[in-house]
Image (cartoon, rainbow, N blue to C red; front, side, top):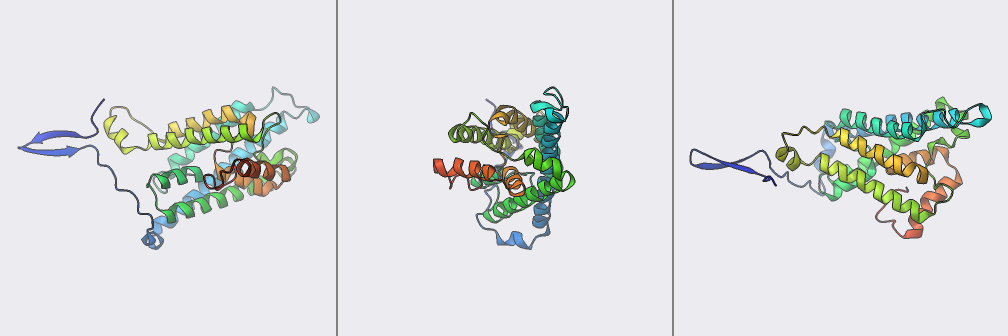
Length: 266
């Protein structure tokens, strides 16, 4: 295995190159609140999550409209589950690419929380990112409803719920594993050690992250509709506001006593 740090002798002295482990982010950093770049990052997270929910929710509604047999549709019409998964993965690829240099391109409270535990972001940044993401998700879903209110209400608003034939335990397991795959991919794709060690292999971080979202959606759409992004699930539930949606999301957590690990309903 290649070494993490290459050392070479130059004029009798040894110098490290290529890789330096970045220092952990401070737990509290009030100075962030005085920096414009911090608020710009919050705006980027808000807008990115808004666009993410707007496009993906309309994709789901459009698919259900095209396959609705009561209005002349068939099961072969529309983009299908594969197309929905591409919409989610493709939007994450685009939005992470656009916002990575501004906010880090989290667009997901689970990713933000994972990076906080890894000491990549401060507590203040993590909390305000989550607020911005959830607010963006609510606004994005609200826009989708505003443009297509009749279809939105008729076809479930793209909200996550446990599908018939599955119980809360199965749904929780699918969401835990799916979220792990995503966060694990984020850490791997953004690891500075990897970039230095494997510099001969160009890695565009948004690409594997988008593919991870795509693959997880293929596996879990039939179970829960895929809620590996708590902001996505929360925003859709707030706007659709139907009892079964809230019951499924709350029961998954309360039944299995994981309130502290998953502060946002899946």
